[in-house]
Image 1 (spheres, rainbow, N blue to C red):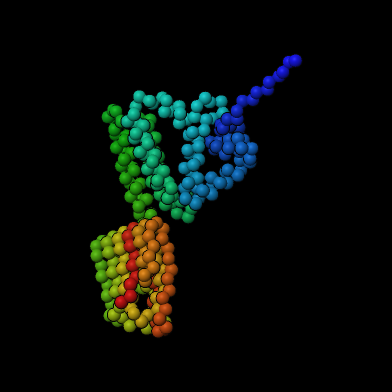
Image 2: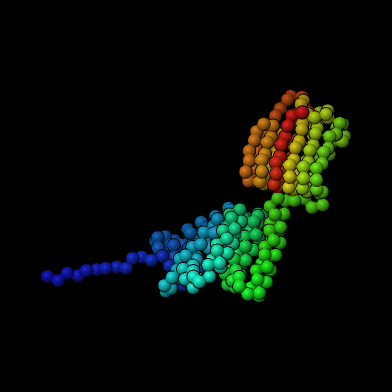
Length: 281
């Protein structure tokens, strides 16, 4: 009796050349798992808008998943081609790691966050990989990439911390004694801003104060007899509002402490990198 043995090749994850939008990652995942590629496209877009993670995942998949008809992926092919240049591999790894960290905090909408910094790091990584660190011309290219990276980093820092332009640098203390000397807005670019309202008898009703520090600390001392309605925001640092403390990145808290005096101090406090503290006088 003759027996027929049917063998099938194992399914291989590849990026197809047909019916793809960009690099073929979503189309390849859909074909491999027998699902609609639209599901993966939606997932990548949502993750990209939420915090840049979708872009990182898509780029990694594009590098490690081979294209249809190719023996190896782009990453495997490039690593094999440049096995004799370990310094280039190390430099690429450092730049790529920094780009991933920057991109993890990036936002496409409504604000770019660290997106431009991540793009600059990615360009620097490509230049380092393609040109290498050996000749004078290559060193010039590396220097130009470094300068562009520094400039992009400065722009990204300004966007991230929302540094108020022309707002001054240093330590500033404002301790009014009468309500008419309490301003509605206080701003400092870099340094420490202290607002001491403990000696002020506020009028009946609401008194609004908005204070912003780009990089540094913001300390507000409020009257003992006033209701305090405070909203605090910190991009990176610590937020201490009348004993309630939180720390980390993108911190937002709202605290209301009532006294029943009829005097209400409404505070809108924000700092980019630093601490925001509200204390009772």
